[in-house]
Length: 153
Image (cartoon, rainbow, N blue to C red; front, side, top):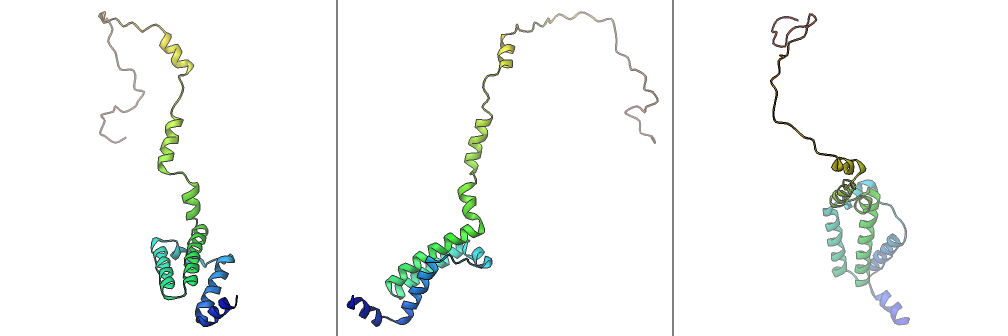
């Protein structure tokens, strides 16, 4: 135990303060401001956080570097939950799932009406036409204008 305390005393105080702050951020449910949440929830924001965590890992104490990775993951997770993208990716169906559901909805079983129509006798059509003795006539227009009238109505 004495060796651990001596090791801690030998390290820089800034590294210890950074490690303590990262532990506090990870353990407490600190909410980010909405402007920062929107910035972190983009692909560029995630890349910047990852690069920052790598920088802390290589330039500072390794424990603080690992804590920086955990804090970056926690920040990305909290930002996605606060902005709503977590819910959209996990709870809304994808287009492939929607297409599959719609094809299931359109899979109707063979209905009673279709069975009865299939059982009915086929319609017989005679190709022989008898000469009709009547001709169609135009009924009264009741003072309506004809369809090809171009004048003032």
